[in-house]
Amino acid sequence: MGNQQVSEPETIEIINEIHNGIIGVPYKAIAFYSNGRGEVPVPVKAPVPQGLDWDLFQGPAPRQEYMHDTWDYNWHWYGWTWGTGETGNNAVHELHIARWALQGGFPERVDVAAGKNHFPEDGWTMYDTMDATFKFPGNKIIKWDGRNHSTA
Image 1: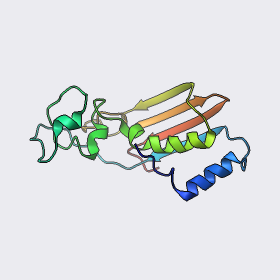
Image 2: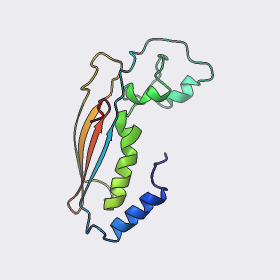
Image 3: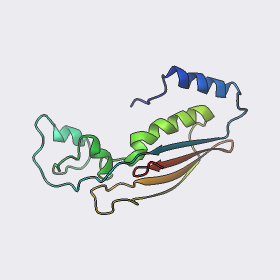
Image 4: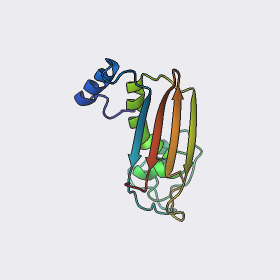
């Protein structure tokens, strides 16, 4: 998996400055992602699109019939079989930079509140809102605020 920003000269410069003490010893980072995504279609049975190897796409997951539009970018939102919601879609990038800045290692504890708070009747089966606190050794924390249906 690639992590955007890691090779950006500006990011490297900022992280180096943080590691060199420009703000003292960092103990907290706030990472977030907000997006005004709309409703996701309710999946319906459909023929597998030409050129898509549906078995290969499913990997080791239990086999399911193909449902329209659940494989392209939308796989993130359709359940735990393949989906990761915004955590695996965008949080991984933002949290990586925060961990890098804090030199946090692995968290000792993670507290999460998440839910599907928007478009209750659409096809989105993952949470669309997540607030998480990652607690690291040395009293360091990262706060994650992920919202799929809010640009505020």
